[in-house]
Length: 299
Ligand code: SF4
Image 1 (cartoon, rainbow, N blue to C red):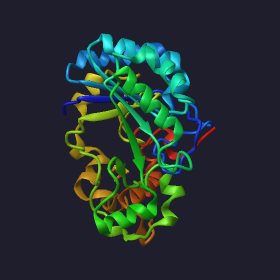
Image 2: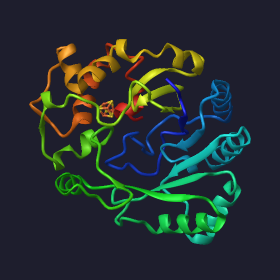
Image 3: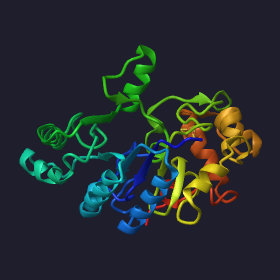
Image 4: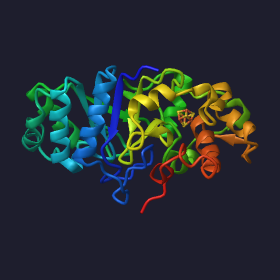
């Protein structure tokens, strides 16, 4: 396994509670990285020698703006390419957005702004427009990230098209609870592969404020605060892993079969069944199916 990108979930906290959020971002969430933890992570990543990109995301990373700014400076000084994912709440006006972004100019290679009708009542929010204009003026590469509504995602499966820059809903995280009643169902035993993750060679991973290394949100391959990153990567054996192995061999349906789990007849998609199966398996694999924050247990 060659890790080329690491995404730091700087915090689980967010101003919003979007229905599609697979990190369960919320004002009620807990868990935020400290500067020292981030520096430790970056040093471990540098020692690994394979990672090109570092992303800061959440939750909403700009809630901890000083920590974010310092961490971007550190990562850039270490030679990483650096990106941020934000909902742009801070871009009240273009002038204000310019001041928020000015310390990051010349350090960021990507600013991804999440904007869609989960975050507000418009596809592109005024704040997102302000953030984009300010980023362009400062020479920061910027793009919008949008997720379609369930009905639009269903229609796109027929037409094969969503608007440029928009992706379909994945029914994992909060979406596995909040959005599944707005789409149809597929037979559980047809959901025989994970459509989104490359378990054999993941390439990029997420690390959360508790040190968990997520191969998919809520599916941890080790804890970076307890074990060196290089050892976690070296010890990774997807085929024999008790959760990843079945997912590789037959998708979420194989998880159900392997552990003889109770199930319904139909699910919105593979992620929906995966989420349901993993919830039933959490007590058996508590260190792998963690933390509570990613299973919707908020404070
Ligand atoms: S099927 Fe499971 S492992 Fe794959 S992307 Fe969906 S939730 Fe993640």
